[in-house]
Amino acid sequence: MASPSLSTAPREQLSEAEERFERWRKRLGWYLAPAVLAVFWFIPFPGLPPDARHLFAIVAMALVLWMTEAIPLAATALLAPSLCVVAGLGSAREVFKPFADPVILLFIGSFFLGQAMLKHGLNRRFAFVLLALPWVSASPLRLYAAFGGITALISMWVSNAATTAMMLPIAVSILAEIGARQGVSNFRATPYAAGLILITAFGASVGGMATPVGTPPNLIGIGALERLLGYKVTFFQWMSLGLPIAVVLAVFLVWRFSRQCPFPTLLLSDNRRWLEAERAGLGPWTRGQVNVVTVFALAVGFWMLPGLVSALAPQGAASPTYAWVSAHLPESIVGLLAASILFFLPADRSRESFTLEWRDAVGIDWGTILLFAGGMALGELMFSTGLAHWIGQGLSGLFQTHSVIGLTILFTAVGIVVSETTTNTASATMVVPIAIAVAQAAGVDPLKPALAACLGCSMGFLLPVSTGPNAMAYGTGCVPLRAMMRHGIWLDLVGWVVIVITVLLFGPSLPAPR
Image (tube, rainbow, N blue to C red):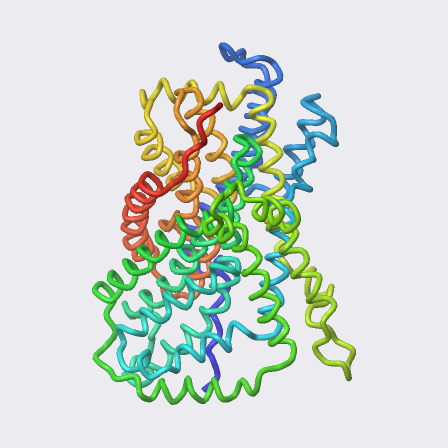
């Protein structure tokens, strides 16, 4: 059976009232953003020097544009730093320096690896091999576990949106098969359809929290900690926090959807035969697939190497071996080397085609990279002008929170709430530097509040606009808005608790000054 296509783009699934709201939201941002810039530019905020006040106006304008999407998010990320140069907040070289930050290079390398996986069909091969296993197809409950687990596993290394795009067509195909076996004319209207689609979208966002390269907010947090605090979070160290959180939340998803959106009482033997047929149709491994898997495995190994050396060497992070590996094989360079090797390895000598070619590379999400870099530029200026410290003092006084525990709880919640209304990437760009500033103003270690804020920004499961996976799930026509909100609020609350507990118990602390 051919896989049914996704119904339409998310926008076409919106009701007439929702369409009007979207038009109103963008139109409001188009007028409100310049008004906010003009008003904030001249308001004499107490204790705020002129440079910081002007940056505050530019950041406020960028927030309005990001939240209303009046213009593309990446365009705002270029506009705001450009205005900072015009305002005299720094030279073009200084302001745009974060656009060449090593974290940006790691971002590009990981995107190239993900694009190579898509090009050579590794997503379908991995998915069908696992889903066709007898233990998976023996029970509808296990289908939830398999889909949530596979999606989370892939999204640890490939972007959340790309992972969702890989898995949703397979989910819709399986739902159509089950609907046909049950004689259901409109399988998209069934509760189990919403459950399988949502566990795919939510699982992608949850899995992305497990590794530094899994989702942009992770890299934003790591970059901010290194730039603003001088603390380097290793690949291994991040996974020691992110992976347990992802596992707990994935288990919660399976438990909730199996109870709230049960599949019909049905043995999936017929679907198992269909999955096996799809797997057989994939054919033998191609040379390109072998190349991608080999290079990807090497990249993951080298990403984890510094953390393993630190954990195993008697001297830990003071080991000469650790220092050499960190200096010569940083994560960004490993990612770029891995991607560059794919351009070099032939996939088909007879056609003179290579594993990855530039026409493939141009298809990565360059807009997200620009958004990431623009946010980093604004974050650095917020600290250099004193704006972040001023905001931190204000928030600290407002909430009267002066402990690591209180600030960790607060900024996990702030990250989750902000990510509901804007992209996770933009949320991390805004919230992580403020969390650092607030903690510093309160005189406490900012590392745990900043890490918790970063992880909180990977949440946001309430609305279709909260994340790319949410929007794609809504676009299948299988997920009513009320269903997304009902399940999303529970995942947000459980995620808040799990992140706070994990970071407070196992998160690192800044070394005491000598």
